[in-house]
Image (tube, rainbow, N blue to C red; front, side):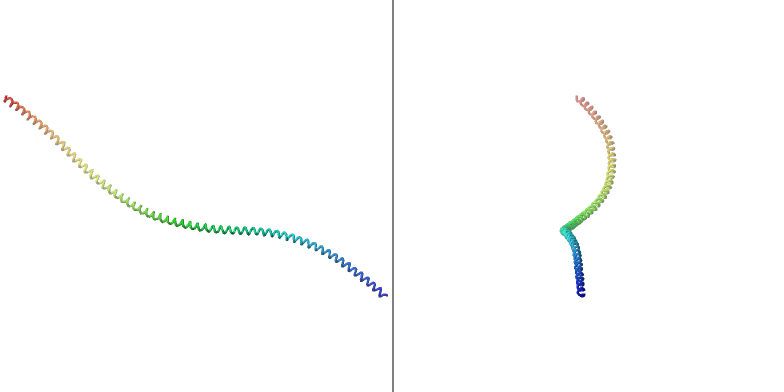
Amino acid sequence: MGNGMCSRKQKRIFQTLLLLTVVVGFLYGAMLYYELQTQLRKAEAVALKYQQHQESLSAQLQVVYEHRSRLEKSLQKERLEHKKAKEDFLVYKLEAQETLNKGRQDSNSRYSALNVQHQMLKSQHEELKKQHSDLEEEHRKQGEDFSRTFNDHKQKYLQLQQEKEQELSKLKGGEGSLKKQTEKGRKTEHGRSSQRRCKGGKVSSIRE
C-alpha cells in the first residue's frame, strides 16, 4: 500500500512535471513564435526596404542606362562628326597644300621671269649708260670742235672783215680819185667842146 501511494505521488509529480514542461514548452513556443513573428516582420520590413531600394536602384540603373545610351549615341555622333571633320580637314589640307605648291611654282616662275627681265633691263641700262657716256664724250668733242671751228671762223671772219674794210677804204680812195679824174675829164672835154664850137663859128663866118 505504501508502494501504491508512492507510485501515485510519483505519477502526480510526473504529471505535474509533464504539465509544467508542456506549459513551459508552450510558453517557450509562444515566445519563440512571437520572436519569430517579430523577426519575420523585421525581415519582411527589411525585405520590403531592400525591395524598394532595389527598385530605386533599378530605376536609377535604368536612368543611368538611358543616359549611357544617350551618351553612347552622342559619342558615336561626335565620333562621326570628328571623323568627317578630320576627313574635311585632310581634304582642305591637301587642297591648301596643292594651292600653296601651285602658288610657289607660280611665284618661282614669276620670279624667274622678273629676274630675266631684270637682267635684260640691267643690260639695257648698262648699254644705255655706255651710250650716254659715249654721247657725252662725243658731245664734248663736238663742243670742243665747234668751239675750235667757231673761233677759226670768227678769226677768219674778222680777218675777212678787216680785209673787206681795207678793200672798201681802197675802193673809196679810188672812187675819189676816179671822181677827180672824171671831173677833170669833164672839164677838159668841156674846154675842147668850147674850142670846137669857136672854130666852127669862125669857119662859118669865113664861108659866108
